[in-house]
Length: 318
Image (tube, rainbow, N blue to C red; front, side):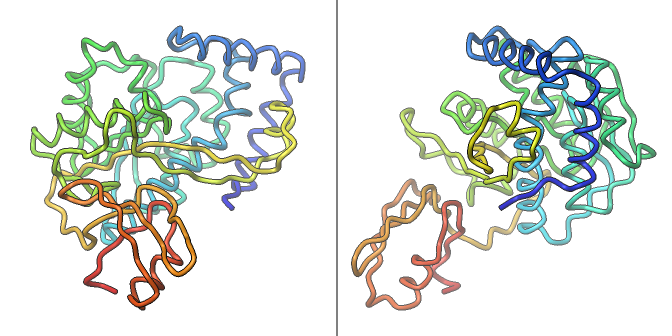
């Protein structure tokens, strides 16, 4: 189970102590209502921002860290020196990135909300590499090794979304990373962006093992899940009984340079374990494939029994 770094948990709690539990609860309800009614980005006041820290930052931090760990696992020699985060909020993506890569020397965080910028400076222990820019997400963007758009695609104007995406892609020296909620709506943005940027010469690092057309039907969506331990403030504001939360997400890592894929497929769901056999659903370069593996296929069966949702699959390596 993923646990928030203790220093970050304490820093968040210190910020939350500047407001009353009643104010935070009211702000959370207001945010939830506006998000459900899809009224755009409702985060305005200090209390709204604090409520976001308590309710959403733990999950978005763990998702971002998991995505960066995926980049590191797929490309062990990657050593990004700079980050451009568009719509940075309180600096969550930077906090996650520095948990995985120690090569980052400078980070440009573009954020319009001054409350988030102030809170970000309080959360980030070493602000030396940080350059905050109080601005909306509008090109041109300065070039950086990694450019990220985390949970912001749906907030971009639809008529300008692909143009902004192209500008973000142009600004990426090495990688462009997109993260969205693991919902049909969130994945639809990822899928559209994937196809568009592959047409512009992008190479897919993850989650896909190919650059062919995404085989997901309109009724299905590619997403993953990360389980996190809820900090005390997270449980309190959500009035939660469980000490953990599962956050579903969709993501895309694109590279400027060609990628040598070491796996031919990836599990899109948890394996279905039956008596004497296991059924796995794979995303391959030729489409979705359901594979039934029996005990007679010893190495494959051993893999299938241990495989998890999102595991990479390549029979040549078994």
